[in-house]
Image (tube, rainbow over all chains, first blue to last red; front, top):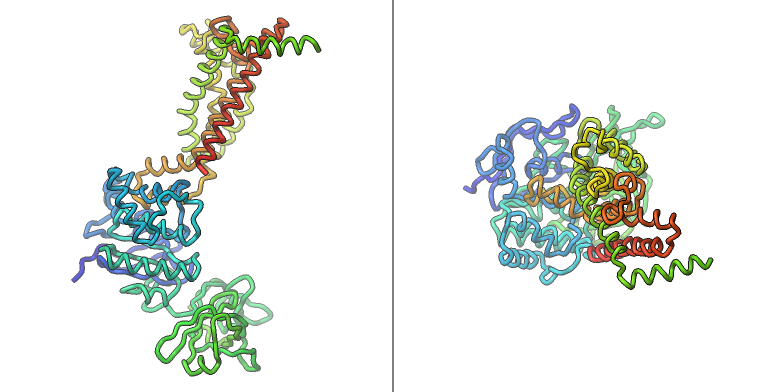
Length: 338
Length: 230
């Protein structure tokens, strides 16, 4: 059985009397990829920051390779932190060359210049950017920046690599490239990768194990179409405001901030709006198509991404494509409130 | 009008003949101001940095105080230091008055708030991700602080240059604390003031041209450094 590299026991993080993270027990085994899934504000980033020892938990214990981390001295904490690293969702490159950026972690570890050069070269090869050493960081595209940040993390050969939403700000082409890099890291190194995402399908594509987190707690399965927003009452009706210009009609006794989810099977897809008792109807464009056996999962951008599932037969009959303009309809009663 | 043209002609004559007195004055000015700014940087850069990144009691007040000190008139600094180092003052035993050291003290007091205030604002403007990035890559607190200072490098250099520009051009404190003694404490600004009062325009203009050239030279170097960074 693989060894646990990180163990969490009774972990809690409070901010101004509110518990934003509450995890009883969670183990990460070496050389595996873990996908932590949850909507924005569910506690994913806080968890990564705590595991990377950038933030302290309010309660509980973290074990790294069997050693408890919280009772360590400053120098021992630095030693443990140097065995892992975090690729932030909003990555930053120092105002210097690609080489200087990737070599930073090696320089502060007093690694010799010759070894530095070798490791930088290898890290750039891993992310498919060989020969980029002398480029200025501010001349890179968003996708290249993300790859250099990953190379910088790989150069120090971490035991654990945390990646916070590694593809969130990237175009589709770079999403594929970064996903390939993650798979390559698993194939070529022993590194344990723990990444967060709000894209459930990405988590299942990449991870050996998917961990779902909602409101700071580990849950069995994160539902699709999960949103965080606020329930408001207008003219006697309850609305869930999910973004500035979009609200769902719902049935609820609650008022205030909540999570809601809509089962993709409860969303009807059509080309035109139609007369029905359903109170929620939105026009949008298909932005993603994933075929799964007899079903097809479609992501439609209606200002926010909504996922719907239809049969392969319907998909073919309707002649749907990426960019097709469609209408999504669902009843207020199918919106599940947490 | 003739006396101005004659003054400019004489100024170039003095500069190109490498007049010994002029160059001794320039060297002393540079020595005093560079020492004062060097010492002020050693104190001001770390203080400005700490003020920007640390949370402490009275932080707001200290920022207001440092910014208020920027407006401190040089003659007031001269007056305060004079009262401390004159024979009757608490530091009179060191016989510092009318020495280059006294001028360095005055210019140090003038330069330090400038460097603290501008370093503080430079570090505050640095992306918060710099520190976190360094820490996630395994940096210690000192190493991550150095990464922030490096990112703010150009702005800190501007702070130091601004302080140097201010002290080398000031006349109040240099006059009161140095006394404008020929061959000992006569610097460019005090010499310009004295020689102009005596009607020696050529001498004054020559020093004025050198002063302006030094200011230009430093700014050109600064821009060259900026271009290198970009």
